Image (cartoon, rainbow over all chains, first blue to last red; front, top):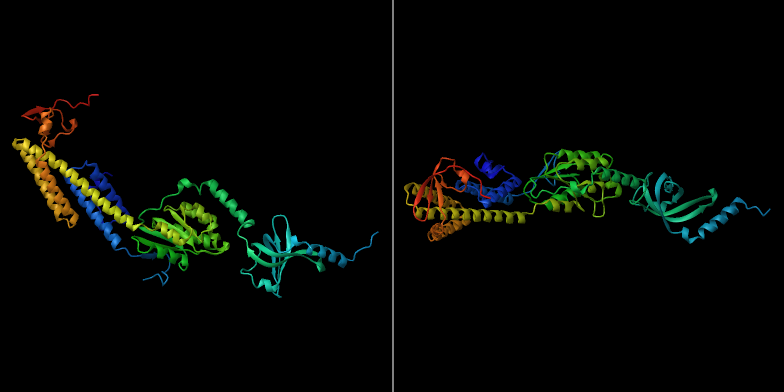
Length: 81
Length: 398
């Protein structure tokens, strides 16, 4: 999907994106900006989207704490918190 | 006829001959155990055999109590002792002084080799199918015993990483282990982005579930890549061959899977810098074009276009300044500087060399296909303008 499509169509709120998805989208945005094929308005939208994705990633990194789940049964006591 | 020996004399002679042979003392022998008898006296009797031969063995109580494992039929062992001749029964046997489990050879080992050959022939070990570990997994699956030290090692090394850690509990030892490990792996399909499968160190027997075909196939069929971490560095199992990556220990597996946060932060900063740089460059390009045109062209229509573009540039600068990041202010400052420079720039000299600029209602025409045949446009020269009509869109002259 080209950037025009992603910028101009519905986007997931950055808060809903995983780190991996945010990084992938960010990479696409940076590349499109560098290619310089976007119109002014598209560039600006892309830029703002990029900044919010970077914020999302940083907050994921800053707020990182170990989140453990278990598929079957209960977490052993020493691991549950 | 020579003098006939009594049986006792004969056996005595044989015994003297055997015990006098130093090559039959203090030796190691390797084989599979059978007919293990734990006698009430505390002594152990068993037969050591391989594919073609067998020899009876005796292990007396004192030495038996020092063994660190229980003798059982089918085990591959190394025994240490002397060959002796048991006169009352005319039997050659090994007087065993020590024994240990043999992980190297034996029937089980050959069976394992056959399994490896079969799986290798089927392509389960192929290097081409090994997949990389995702750099930023949103979910890390761990298949191991919830009570084992391996899980604690993995969690300690993973530390606070972005993303979830999902434990898929498995029995990692005993007869039910292979099926349990296999189903714990399949339970993580669709959930985990990468899976660590493993357990801490143990005897060859303890690690044997990871040599089972059912575990090998579960790893092979896993959609997320699998990192195997079985036992210690020297233990290599079938699971290790099938897995996308083999870690020497559970801690090392966690090390391999854990995202590198430092590098990630650097990459984010890099991405931001690249965005700012390219947006600034693109703004400067446009600004140069429009400002120069604005000065050059007297036509009211063009002035309107230019003024519109100017406004959107101003709007953009405002928006950038309002962004919280201080870097954005810096960037806006650079934009001002760039704008200043632009005033000294002009395409006039270029136009004087014989170039002209084609303008349509929508702005500068960059390619022939921007215009439909019949459309009006302006050609701007260093001196004066022409109102023109397009006749036909043609390909490049070659």
